[in-house]
Every structure is written in C-alpha cells, then in structure tokens.
Length: 133
Image (cartoon, rainbow, N blue to C red; front, side, top):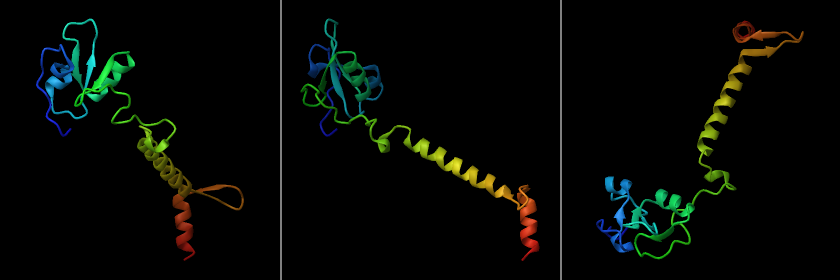
C-alpha cells in the first residue's frame, strides 16, 4: 500500500474508522478495507482483505481503505474454480500425483512377469539379470 495508513479513530466516519482486532496487532497489513456496521456504535471499522470479504458476504457495505470508494471488485481476486492452475490445492494434488507415480514405479520394479505367468520378486530379477551379463 503506497499511502500512509490512518491511525485508528472513533469509528464515526470511514476516515476515522476503528481498527479490527487483527489490524490492532499489525496495522501494516496491505489491502485494507473499511466496513460499515450500520446501527452499531463506532460503526466504521478498518479491516484486512479477508475480514472485509467475510463482512461483504454477510451484507455489510465495504469501501476501499485508501480512497474510500465502494468496493465493486476486489483488488486481489479470489481464485477461479474453473481454472485448475489457481486452485488452492493444486500444488498438493500435483505432489500426491508425483508420489503415486513414484510408488507405482517402485512397485513395478519389484515384480516382473515370467513366461509361465508367475511373478518374481525384485531381488530374484536382479540376480537373474546379473547372471546373464
């Protein structure tokens, strides 16, 4: 965030919003927003991106924490479910796939089909191969 972050105020206007508990602990968090909790004392609260999204989902008004314009699009978009490369679990899924392939390769190396249909263990295969060299 390139502009200075206002100090917490009385919560009576967006510019004098009180800090959320998260921002009280770390007021340097980027992507700050201000939400309006109508009907509550100190109704304007400066929040983090995650908090603002939760408040927006609950129906609260959200304004940008820098220019105080209503938020119509998030500066940091959520990953699209239709794009697997942005899936939150994509890296984990790829790691699982690699591990499964490695285990499958190791399991296949332990056994080899014989002409008579029986299966030999990996150590037996190694000794047969070395005896033929």
